[in-house]
Image (cartoon, helix red, strand yellow):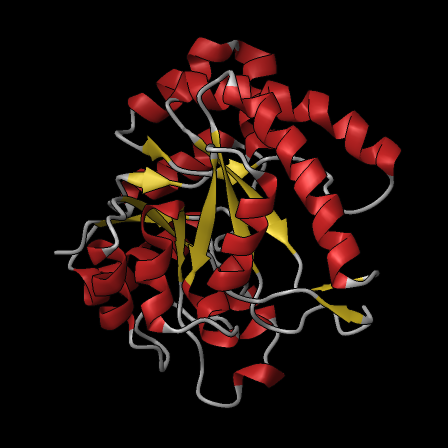
Length: 280
């Protein structure tokens, strides 16, 4: 059995703003962990208090996974500065839940030369890391594999080695890598890079990919684990050898799956996880 804990991801199933409905579906499907929407958690906190959010997870036996940090690391300075307050509030709630990882997407194509963008990202992500550090929260940088921003003129990076280089520039101990199996498949990483990253990998997304040339893929063709061509057994073994233990959120963007009642969608995700991992 893998040390990775299969987790539901809110992007995969019917889109609901109600955390309780989402976690009900996760628990009914047998999941023991779930990545979650921080806006939904914050909405429940505003309506019923922080203890109610904590109870929502605990009463269902669900380990909180990762959430989106809420940081606007690409774009106008004013937007980024304004987002730091949101980042701090999110981190406070995440820490209260026992969720210690907030995700930040790092695009693989950008609007300025790579060195200039890396300098900007290092500065801004460093500020975000400092903002969440007091709550004991770490950032998880998600590299992007497929070419989903073809209109952007400059290539940045699309794999583990580039992410490690950015982490070195940032220079904070609470910054790691979000390893998404689909981005790994579509990007420029190799299996050996997982060992190089080691415990820098602090969150995982689990999914599969169809046959074909990954350089032609976008995010819409992701598949459930076991429904594609990826050697997930080898990838999971490499992650375990690298020391990763924790949730692996099954994140796909499939309109047919999202159109199902949320409980049915969650059950289908759980069934795929059982075929690949033997759990939940």
